[in-house]
Amino acid sequence: MDMFEFLSPLFVLLTIGGTLVGIIFGAIPGMTATMAVAVCLPVTYSLGLENGLALLLGLYVGGISGGLVPAILLGIPGTPSSITTTLDGYPMAKQGHGEKALRIGIIASLVGGLISLVILDLFAPALADFAIRFSYVEKFLIILFALSVMAALSSDLLLGIFSGFLGIFISLIGTYDVTKGGNGEWRLIPPGTEYWLESGFSLLPVLIGLFGLAAILDEAQTGALPGMSQKDIKIGQSERFSLRIFKGQTVNLIRSSCIGTFVGILPGVGGSAASILSYSNAKTFSKNPENFGKGEPAGIMASEAGNNGLTGGALVPLLSLGIPGDSATALLIGAFTLQGVQVGPLFIANNPVTWDAMIIAMLIANLAMFVLMYFAIRYFAMVVTVPKHILFPVILMMCVIGAYTINYGIMFDVWTLLIFGIFGWMMSKLRLEVAPFIIGFILGPSAEVYFVKTLESFGDVSIFFTKSPIAVVLWLLIVGSIGGSIWLHRSASKHRDA
Amino acid sequence: MGDLTRVTINFDTSHLLFPTLIGCVLGLLALAIVIRDRKSVLNAHRHWAQVMRATDKPRFFGTLALTILYFSLMVPVGDIWPNTGMGFLLCSIPFVALTGLLFMHDRSLKHALPMLIVSVVAPLIVWWLFTDLFYLTLP
Image 1 (cartoon, each protein chain N blue to C red):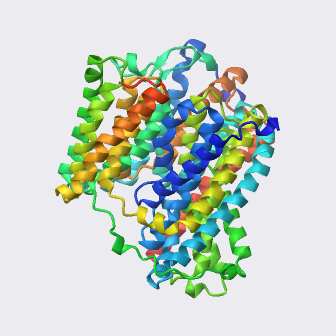
Image 2: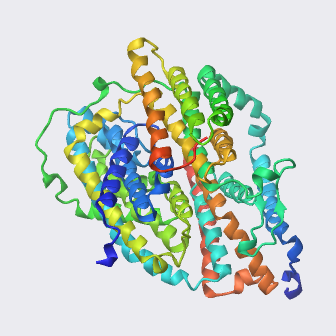
């Protein structure tokens, strides 16, 4: 019974509450699961690790799932991961089958979430066991691989790589940490800012700024247009829903869930890639590809199973390698840091209770998402009409709380929020990529330790290529991901020119 | 090859090794971007002028100004009643109300009233939650 000592009524309540709030965030266009996690992170300070994670995982699952509501009812993806749900969901809604489309999406989301959870439970411990054998060389190459994959999947390879390295560079501001083998000297600190930047920029204010304030500034820049009114919602009349619509779709659901999970495992690749890949595969293998885009239920199933498949997949690299799978799981690192727990290959072995708690929380969150959305879908449909002029100022206030309380009351962290909020807004205007930047920022200090300590120990750069067969494989993967990306970009531009 | 790849790390200056390396890589990448996108770089002023034209200036700069004012006032106001979180509470109420009004398009009393109620209730709940329930320090 000790195994489930964390399973208290509070734990269940926090998971369900988190899922509910997450759905609301996901259902409002312009607000994402990442923003939900960022805004609610300070609430976890006093909850303890397991209860805090229960809340955050509920927010994560709910946030990803909630995006289907506006995608289907308004034709606007609530979150980037619901982008392909609009293609068939909105046409179905226009035909008067909005509620039916929502229910298809909700069931597909549940299937995607559960399949990815099983893969997470089976795969993460095995990968962690394997990664325990990694030396600093392999750990450094894993980080390089993560950055190369993210850059490769960016819309612009060069800007993607630049963003990742910029993230590393900014993470190095401050002291070369003695506790990690550094010499305790300062670097990259502008004169006059030593007092504030001695320990560099804190992770959470940076994340909250990039995902919270930047989104609000973007909204302000475009004029904070009024939200939709109730008459814009095309939910249609109540109609009897039958599971027969899923007949012949088992392969589509399983394939899409697995694609979503696999995409989640790749570091930094977002839910939009998961749903697009799942959708295009479903269309390719469909007997009626011509129906896709005109209100085909299989399209909604593929998209939603794919993006919810991401939720478990994104936790695999986080919990086995310490590398976040997407931006929301990057924020989970903040929750672990708050509680003094380090994620990496030893995490599951050293924290079996927390690991079990995460699996159970994900399970409860998926089931809660299904029950809440399936039976109260008409109420959630109303959420899309909540005015932004009420929400955004409150969210900004919550961002301040999160930044201020992270280090128990340092005002510089609040200014960090503003600096990175403006920086995040500018990044989008300069076509720089936020995801590689974040991963670079999170992993930069570790990359430095692995790199410098390897050279101190071996005194030879060639060790990065010759240390082990794993190192060679990782180099092949790095070169392959960059080469593949160049090839893909070239063939795409050839297609455009043709 | 052996001698070429050999390096000796001086522990006293080891804090500069990785930042220098990353700085060089960034410089090379920036150079590659500038060469590839030279037309865009030369026309950067036009791009930003276009961004500014498309910007809702009162809302964008108003949000920035209110945020800076909010952050600047929180500590001085909080210092009047130390360790009570009053700086946060007393600054958050007008900030939420003013930002809400700024974001609004139809500022009639019917639409403004719910927003004004939220601007009082939300900071009060958050202040109570964090100071009385979680015992966390607020400015």
